[in-house]
Length: 114
Length: 111
Image 1: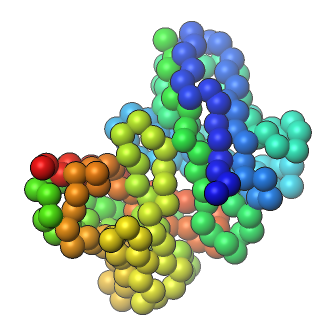
Image 2 (image 1 turned 30 degrees about the vertical axis):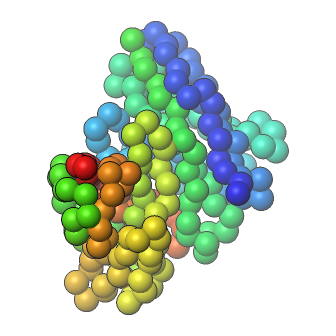
Image 3 (image 1 turned 180 degrees about the horizontal axis):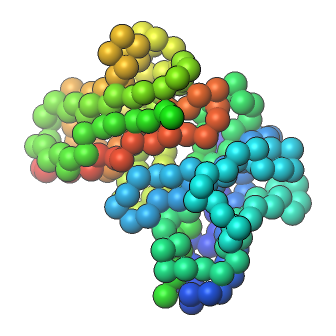
């Protein structure tokens, strides 16, 4: 069964450094998403992406964040200058058609900012 | 805006006990409703879903019925196992847009 994959599984970085989290969505999917989950808290929407542009973003997704689909398979989330409060689990998700509704989630990348 | 409320737990049950995790929602449209499960150290897995009123989603012995009149989507299982220990998230999605998740309910099943 096709699945969403994410790398790395765990990223440790120093405060102020840039990080790039990578996701490979399911191959025929067109809509891509990033969510985050601070330890012990709820899953929060960050951004959705379709047709090579952001379609919606939350107030969490400020100028420090950016997303990109650099080739036909990868979907990346970049944090330009990490803060301690960026430490969280970051989930990528994808779905094929808006009307399908079901989003398939990757296993997540745990980001630890020291 | 849309929101999801669920009992936060933790919920601790003995093996073979009956499970109910309550979930209620508020939404302006007619959302699809989901239960996702997160096993320790893993990502989110779709457990079941329902896309319209009175639909029942089921999977692995879990069930939930979309109740529009009470805006609820309670998760039930007749006999839980130790392997069901996980965090369960209720979520809604309006026309496939970004998901809104509840806070999660941690379930621990003791042998």
